[in-house]
Length: 111
Image (tube, rainbow, N blue to C red; front, side, top):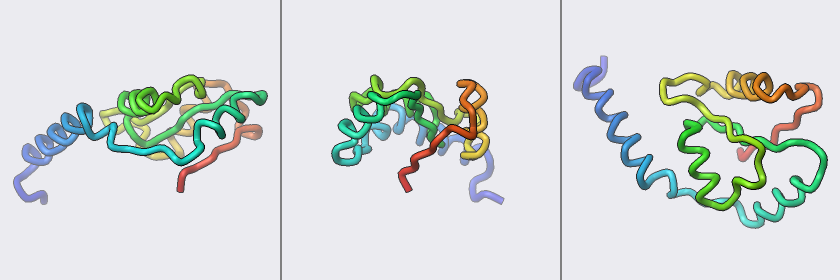
């Protein structure tokens, strides 16, 4: 049982998303030299996608905020309703949407 009940938990999530949507999403940083690495990859055959467990509405804004949108063909993320928060589900969805061959796909993670 949650302290304060479901209503309080729902309100906490609402407030978190509100703050994150205005300010928190920009409290990130990119790895040093990432733009150069992405430019190198972009110059090679193939497509480049982002697949993140962050909600896609925020992930797209984060990528744009850091000037990285031009390196990616699409940004995939979870939905605010909790859909595709599981990385396996998210990657399966991205492969389906792009028609990419899983046998020829490469994932580069940040952890």
